[in-house]
Length: 420
Image (spheres, helix red, strand yellow):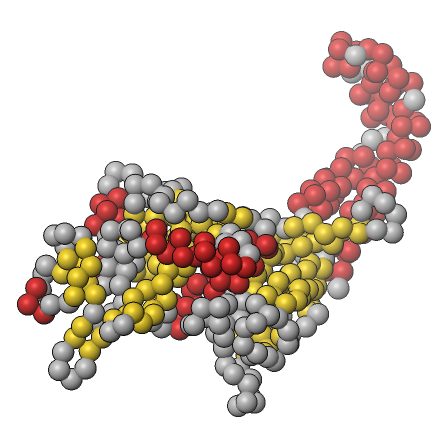
């Protein structure tokens, strides 16, 4: 089991946690670690014959808290992931992983109990992360790892080389030691937000979950409609979402914060899209003014000749009112691929190919085909039928050619940009 930690030492690291909570299941995300934050076990696996691939891991938020004279981390596991790859560029380890189920903390007092249990289990990991040392003009102090005994001890500047100051933020254990409960639905996501929403460093953050892109289609029942999730795809590196050109899709966002969390409202989020791909959007900004809500962003997509890769992002828009508190929010970024429906292109090309062939079928040519050696030797009955009804079949062929051309032309003008 891999453990990927992100702390509260910078806003960027906290945003990584918010992003991990924000993206839909299956989305590929990346963490980065300096080599001195990576455990020896992980380094050996990376340079081994079988680098990490399709192995499970857990993303953990490490929040600094004071314990007497020292600072220690309080650990919040948030989501299960699957490792896609780990590679090294320079002194940086890059970890690409696929997002999976959320850690389900449950509700109320049970959630606090679960968090305490998970925290204690993570503290049993060898060389788990420790906060940076505290210092003043005279000395440095804090808890560090004694390498020989693998225990936490007081920092001693005379033990250089024998103590590990920060622990490892990317580490590996032979087996999972958390006994975690997992959930794929928004209830599990909400349980994580409930726990983080009461933590000192996250209680003023804005949480939302992008549940995905949806296509609204007519159902079999007359006058009714149904929403269908558009599944993303990837090449193992980047997740893309195929959106049908010339149609309208819905991006759904689920907002939630504990009701007893601080009042940070109103807040604004901006939706950034490529105007060359998106013809219209239901709202350019989302005004967040309540602890929970579901927002539906409708996107009208332009018609294209060929598949077009574009981007959609959601960014925090700071409030100009100084009385409104600035907050940290997720910053999701989606690659969208606007595609021409394959069946449309196939029908247009097939129609343009079939129409000339049908127009060449004159009565004399049909008689020749019907009395030809191929049909007479293999299916004599069909051959005689074609020869006997050659005049009528030639007329039907011309009518069919006109119909096929009409339909192909309609699809071309209706579905492709030439119809604009």
